[in-house]
Amino acid sequence: MKVLIAEDDRNIRAGLEEILRDEGYDTIVAEDGSRALELFRQESPEFICLDIMMPGIDGYEVCREIRRTDPEVPIIFITAKSEEVDKVVGLELGADDYILKPFGVHEVLARIRAVTRRCMKRSGHASPTPFTMGDLEIFPAELRARRGEQTMELSLRDVKILQLLHRLRGQVVDRAALFRECWGLDHIPHSRSLDQHVSQLRKRIERDPKQPRIIRTVHGAGYRYEG
Image (cartoon, rainbow, N blue to C red; front, side, top):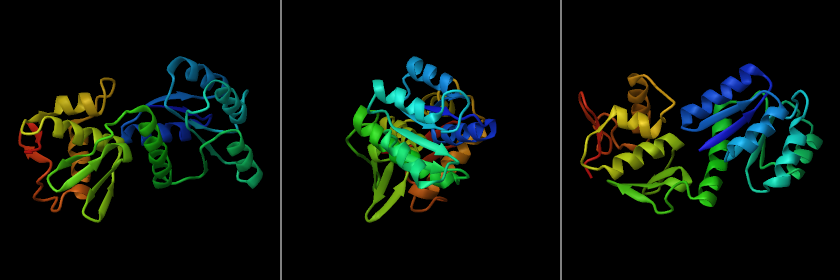
């Protein structure tokens, strides 16, 4: 899933890009409004994180231009403008949400995931049919898993990993395949980053992360779901 980040502050822009890439999104970045509109037309992102106070064309005008051609693409304003009137203007222009700077990672992720669920339901990125791994039900379009009454939040990358293991159940899925399908060809993570991600995922979905039943390690080879 492709996300356009339009933000003139280099540090905030890099921080948002890192958060989204870690979650499993493809990102494109713009440092001003003109570049944001250019990338929107060229790349057709599936949602947009848009700063308001940018040099040249501000975020409000970028939002207006985008809404003239696409009334559906989700837009989240990320801005330091905190007056209620600013929020009202943004929402009236067609923004889907509004995040104030400074913001926390967890807040950004919660709002991004909410937008992603809407994108998936509309565009069919994930199968509308849930699937089961052991006693765990995975709902890709919701970015959630459930075990009985317990609900677990999943990232886009978590879902990709579980979908791949489920599809190839009984087979060893090596690191190269996981990197290729769950990180992307343009991303070359260290092997350790995969192990760390799987470890964190196990903590959420396994009954006993030290004795995993869903994501099993095949030493020296990769991971496997027995099915």
